[in-house]
Amino acid sequence: MWNYEKRLQYPVKITQTNPKIAQVIISQYGGPDGELAASMRYLAQRYTMPYNTVAGLLTDIGTEELAHFEMICAIVYQLTRNLTPEEIEKSGFDKYYVDHTLALWPQAAGGIPFNACEFQSKGDVITDLTEDLAAEQKARTTYDNILRLVKDPEVCEPIRFLRAREIVHFQRFGEALRITQENLDSRNFYAFNPEFDK
Image (tube, rainbow, N blue to C red; front, side, top):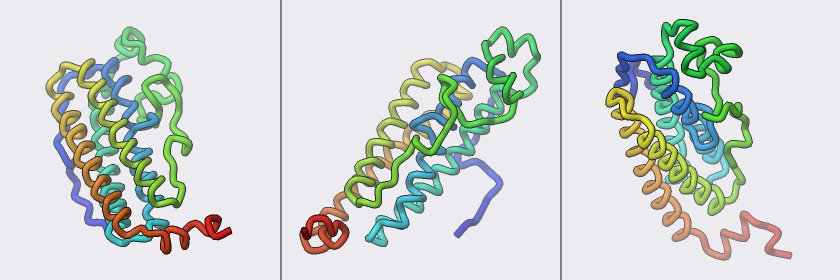
C-alpha cells in the first residue's frame, strides 16, 4: 500500500522563523478542520463504504491528507526552529513552549488540543460523504483565513498548494456522492438501514 518517498508533496523552505505565524498555522495540524482530523476521518470511513470506487477514493484522499499533515509539521517546525527564549516570550509562543518546548503537538490556534471529536464517521454513506464535503470546505476556509493573515511568500506558497488540494478533494467527494446516489435505491438503501423495514 505504501511507497514512501522522503520528500514533501510540495516543498517547504522557510528561511525566517516566525512563531506568531506558527501559532496560526498549527490549527491545520491539530485544529477542528486540520489535516490530522481529515486523514483519520477518511481512513476510518472507508471500511463501511459499500462502493469500492468510493472506498478507494477515501483511501487515496486520506493518505494524501497524511502528506498534508507532514507539510504543516514542516512549516510549523521551520517557523519555530532555534528560537531564543527572548523570541519565544516576545512572540507569545511562551505558553506553548512551557508545555511542549519546540516539539510539534496537535492543537488548534486557540490552544485547544486535538481529540477524536474533531471528526465523524457514522457508517451511513450519505452522512459520511456530506461530512467529507463540509470538511473540505471548512479546511479551505481555514487556509483562506491563514492567507489573509500571512504575507511571507515562503509560507504562503505551500499554503496555497494545500488550499488548492482542498478544492480538488471537495470536487472528488462531490463525484463520490453522485456515484453513491446513482447506486442507492430503496432496496439497497434499506439493506443498510434495517430500521426502515419496521
